[in-house]
Image (cartoon, rainbow, N blue to C red; front, top):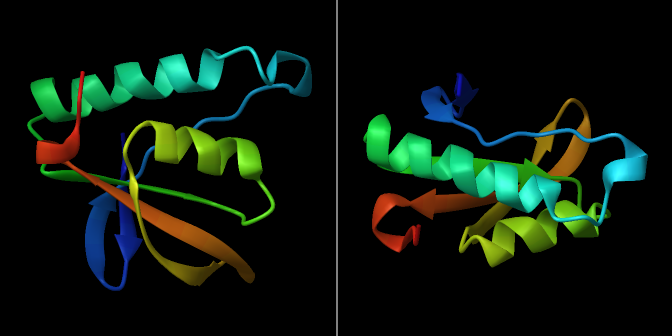
Length: 93
């Protein structure tokens, strides 16, 4: 997990990429859950961000399944993204 600059603050972002032939098999959700567990339990982070393009319904669904809360839409690399945040107290291992 690397710090990410958002509005001048260093934040930690959850990110992943999978080849198309591995989509829909649960790998992203399983990996994301393991990374979140590491971030909250081992690194003792207080919050972790996640964001995706609005049309990336699969990633948005994963963020919501993992209890991330929608915060706002914002511009990143010239495209509108949906920003989500998961706070330590809302994380369920």
